[in-house]
Amino acid sequence: MSKIRVTIWNEFRHENLSRNHQYYHQETVDLYPKGFHQAIADGIRADDLDIRCAWLDQPEQGLGEEVVNNTDVMLWWGHMADEEVRDEIVKRVHSRVLDGMGLIVLHSGANSKIFGCLMGSSCTYRWRDIAERERFWNIAPSHPIAQGVGEHFELQNSEMYGEPFDIPDDGKVIFMSWFEGGDVFRSGVAFERGNGKIFYFSPGHETYPVFYDKNVLKIIGNAVRWAKPQIFAKHSRPKRAPLEDIPSRKPEAITSRIES
Ligand code: ZN
Image (cartoon, rainbow, N blue to C red; front, side, top):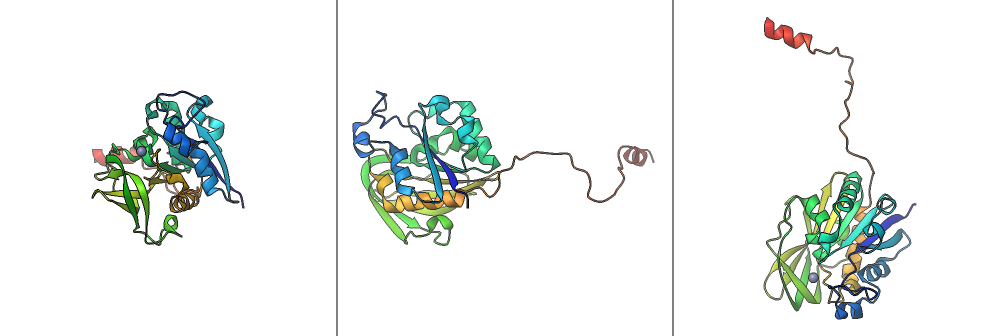
């Protein structure tokens, strides 16, 4: 069985020690000294996955044709620098999703160009960061992404993302979150676009150890396997011959009917 080729794409600005970016957070570096991408890669590593990592400051923003065309499932963590992602890169990833690639959008990736362009809506939500408790309710226990996760689980410190979340209503809601401060959020939602599958999963704030949580990692791993492409095929609009042997009724037949 061939392995699922996974690319974990990370903005990598909050926690990139080697560059002095305006978005640098020491607390994020302390939590994720090798970046979110490496924490996620280590956390979901398994024999059926062939994982590579990519980030914004690499050539072609980490998503050159060779990378994108050899990815079955992409993970996306983006935040403050999303506007820097070039439109041609977004177009490349978008086209690959429509062809069949899976895409797992994490946390503030809800604001990314690629998610907005796949959803066709603003994808906005309410937010508050006071390290409150978040409880995830597993409301689709038979769904492949929910396997091995109990009825509910909690993160003791989380950034609140709350409704209204402006996403289309064709998504299958798998997790629903409750926050200590009273808000609720559709925290795990699965979509299909073209031949590709998309899963939005909300946890992942940069100042909490979310990507070490066993439930979060379990769900991301499940989502990778669920989003694995069944086929890769371009959508096209070919002119097609009839299956039955029928004569063309154009244009003479139409003209004669109008005249008679
Ligand atoms: Zn956040």
